[in-house]
Image (tube, rainbow over all chains, first blue to last red; front, top):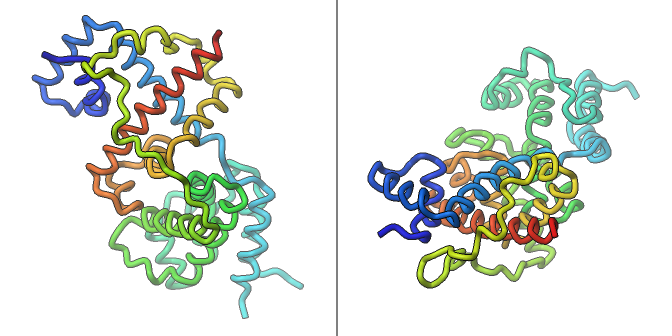
Length: 79
Length: 226
């Protein structure tokens, strides 16, 4: 019998559509009947969507670029 | 002193604001490997400029994610480009150039941690599970449902800070895998090459990192909305 634990442990395969048909069918049957697992899957997807946006938050500032430029300038200066 | 053409170009590159494309249009669509070939064979300065444009942010983010220190991340950024200038011939083309560059970055970052004796007291998440001993989630998830919160709230600066804090709280081995795979969007194979981990091992870490983060975000957002 499929339990919440099976949904949790197969969540990566479920999200990436890598489960075999039988496992998928059993998990979806459980999901249809389990509100806790439904929320688990929804919040898991949402978490991935949000964390993917973190990439836009950390970047090389103009000040860091300037210091990098000065360093590379000295190292790449032709003799 | 009169600057060379290359230096003039570099100034344009590295002082540009974020997102401003300053690379010559003919190199924008050139593969990394071709750029490296140009740099090695003819010291094509524009090729180096384009590599800096492509990878500075990514190198900086990975270095920060490992060290969690902005000063170290900047030092590592500089070290990696110096390594690129001095040791590019050690790139043998056996893996993608990007994987090689990230591996150089990760190694430099771990060296920094060792040099500064900044070892994290890492907690293993291998046994981390959200379900109870009976394998059920009953009463553990639905009460803290935040999936229907409007995007405006979830994408606010405050919420993004909460999310970033949660990621930074992951123990280092999990944090780095999560960063490369889910933030930078690498494939499993690429993460495997960069970190020298087997694909099953990194998938296991990623799985636990995601479970931990989902729970953390649920706690944060539940408290946040009280």
